[in-house]
Image (cartoon, rainbow, N blue to C red; front, side, top):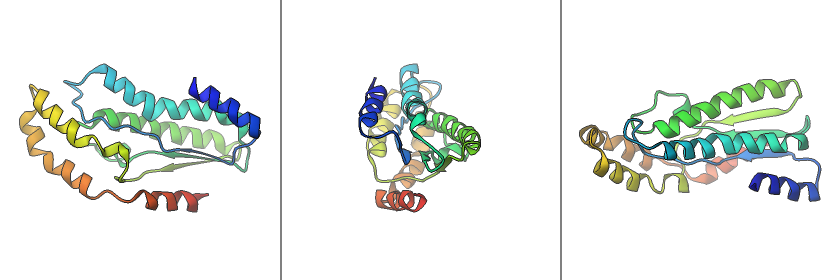
Length: 174
């Protein structure tokens, strides 16, 4: 287990973490109707369970001076567009987890911060065009709406921000 191994490596160096920063995420452009369960489970594993597992494993290294920062998404707070359900549902789950964890950690004076960001120029979006083309090609039910909604995807991809902006926000939070 990578998380257990990471924990053991950290314990060799220190018994305290100042911060856990969870910026992990995967995006799947897929239909809830035509998509496959394996891809949906992969999104859950990466977008939610990896954060849950890491925070849980590292928790005994935290104290009242520590922070946990979790990256959510605007897809978690707005009504998501069609065909982004795998991503949106997993980010909604993460959003709720973050809120409950924050409330629990308030009793321990450990700050839990949720970042809800827009599009950033990261590897998360590198395969969106490829996934869109595959979805259109393989869809039996949604070719027309996918074609009509293409401009929404293009708009989102064109407005993405530099990761430096996110890094500055994390530094400000710390």
